[in-house]
Image 1 (cartoon, rainbow, N blue to C red):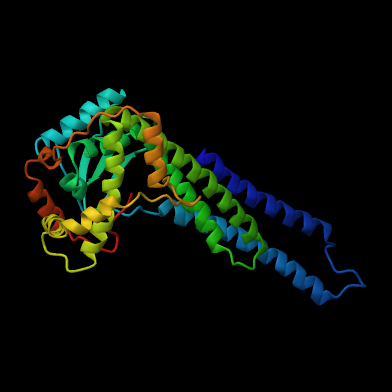
Image 2 (image 1 turned 180 degrees about the vertical axis):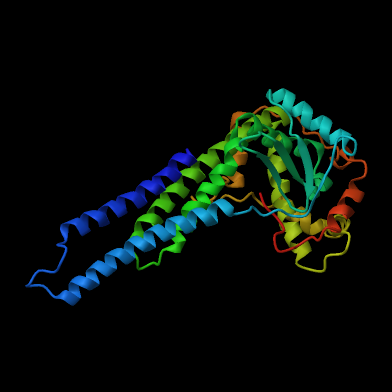
Length: 333
């Protein structure tokens, strides 16, 4: 779909160029005796400038969008020998979903989980925020992993990278045109339509992944995972806004323990219910409602800590910290 929408960008540009060609064909090759030569020349120059700006914007948008690189926080690869429990859990979830497990698992300095897959070779990579593994229960963490395993299983990750680059091309092309340029109006309108469709598709994928994860981990664990993610994002922001020690993750655990009352207050707050059509994720409250509505019968969640899945988790945290944690991008979803 994203490729088709990107093709629509080319159609918009081609239609405008065709309109310019039509106008130029209608114009006489030389000004008529009754018209001003200066005015005629200015009109022709404006039309050619319009066409040049259009071609330049599309070319620059393609160049910038296709060369864009996603944000990548400090991270460390953990293989089955270093994280046997984590790999066993991920492989079990993949087998349950009827798909193959990721080829690589990385722990990163972010409150997030990423699943990605190369389009041509199909190499799968799972990036896991170390603070989630550090602070979540096993039930909550199983839900988070199962959610992204479903993205693998449903093929969402296979085309997501291409879709992101297509979106970057559309946005960059619209941004290169001056607001006063009429060509920019069409491109900005198209960028709005592209974003509207793309974000709606992403939100639908999130609901599907939530349902699959709740089926495996249970609805209670699912809702708790959403809530804990929201809490950890806010706690992480507070933590990195102050002095961050050399041991970033050990310091975060101490920070959460020292501010237990404030963290518990965050857990008692209602989930975020507001959202925008630009958001790639549905509001947390809407996701929780969808989970409980689909799976009303709830078994207790697994309250054991998830941290023991990696025996030397503290050492991995120190390894990531040594790679230069940058607090400018502390979290994600």
